[in-house]
Image (cartoon, rainbow, N blue to C red):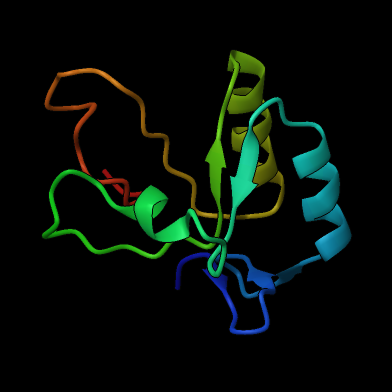
Length: 103
């Protein structure tokens, strides 16, 4: 089981533990960028990758605005047992791989 967002917008870890909403809000408040969740107006656009054969629905998407945001996002995922994948810009085949949390 991967990290999921339940219909009532609760984030659940790989091990099945719910991530407290307060923890998500604190994490979001520390970002220079912003957090996108299912149901947010930007979610459908943000979740797509260039290869539409991969149709993933991440529990949360972090739009990082700094290297510190990337560090905070990876740390939040690690501390909360969340599947985490990093997607960046660029033109290499590695950068353009689908964001699945798996390699």
